[in-house]
Length: 80
Image (cartoon, rainbow, N blue to C red; front, top):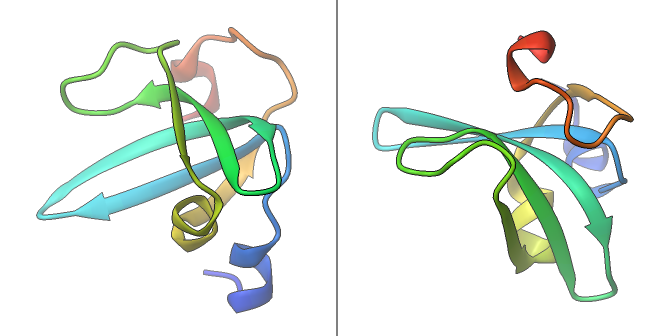
């Protein structure tokens, strides 16, 4: 894992992972707004790949940074 500064800098194209209660979800940052971040689902239990979610920026900052992908709509399996 990177340091806290890596987590805090949220940018379009980043792949972020959230792990809770024994399951993991991967999202691509699609848009960064002052207080919110729009995430594209890549792999998450109960959600469809490509679905978008709007979360608080602080929630996205708390997710693990695992990589980057510039292409929207790209096959999530390609990033694994």
